[in-house]
Length: 94
Image (cartoon, rainbow, N blue to C red; front, side, top):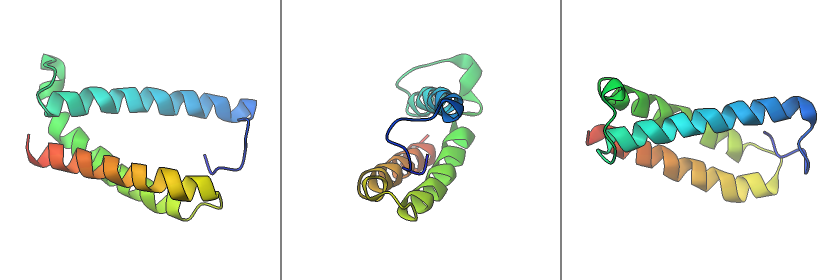
């Protein structure tokens, strides 16, 4: 969230909660695409969703690299990049 706050303001807490929900959904799709779990409702779209998250995380990597927060640049940028690569590799192999 930009790394501006040590304690997240109340207005941004909702955005953080939504972000956590999106991350949990992403976990389900990467596990489905990687054949770790099998949920019939996710099978047909898992590959496409993994490509979506790969692109989204590449954009996120760029935004983290441009952040004013040193911690965000040093920690979150490489983590976001590695996660994007994991989604891309999983999508390509599913």
